[in-house]
Length: 239
Image 1 (cartoon, helix red, strand yellow):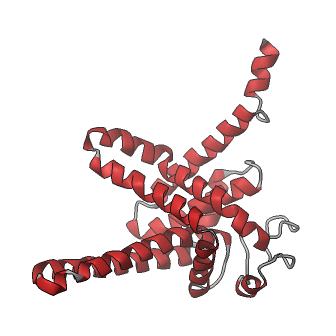
Image 2 (tube, one colour; image 1 turned 90 degrees about the vertical axis):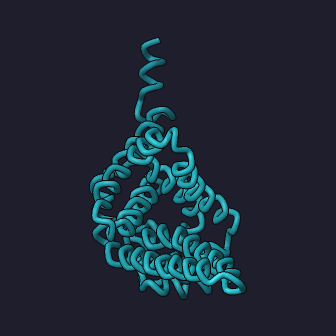
C-alpha cells in the first residue's frame, strides 16, 4: 500500500505531473495579477503568461515559473504593451462611436452593428496575437500577419479559444451571486488556465516553425511544409 501511495504521489506519475503543472499555472497566474496592477502592463503580462505555458508544454513541465514569467515579460514588454494599448485605443473609439449612433438614432443607429463586428474582429485577433508574440519575435505588423495565418489555418481552434476566453468573463459579470467565487478563481488560476488551453491548442501549429536543436533558442525549421510562412516567420527567438 505504501508503495502504491508513493507511486501515486511521485513526480513522474500522472498525478505528480498534473500537480506540478497546476502549480506552475497558479504561480504564473499570481505573477500576472501582480505585474498587471499598472493597467498598461496587462498586455505584456498576458504575453508572459503564454510564454510560461508554451515553455511548460515544450519542456515537459519542468520549468521555473518565476524565471520564465520574468523572461517572457522582459523580452516581450514592448510588443505586448504596444498591442495592448492599440487594442484599448481602438475599443475606446468604437465605444464613442456606439454612443454617437445611439444618440443620433434613425439610419445612423444601424451603423452600430458594423461597429460590433469591427470590435469582435479586433478582440478575436488580439486573442490570437498574444500567443504569437510569446512564441515569435518579429515586428508587430509581421506578428499580426502571423496571427491571421494561424487563425485561418485552423479556424475551429480559434472558435474554442475565443469561447473559453470570453464566455467565462461574461459569466463572471452576469452571475453576481457567485461573483466572489469567480473573482477568487480568476486570481488563483483563471487566466493561467485559459493561457494553458490556448497554448495546448496552438503549440502543434507553432511547432513546425520551431527548432529545439539548440537549447534555449528558437529558429526556423527548414523542413517545415509551409514554405510561404517560413519566409514570413523570420527572426524567431525566445521559447
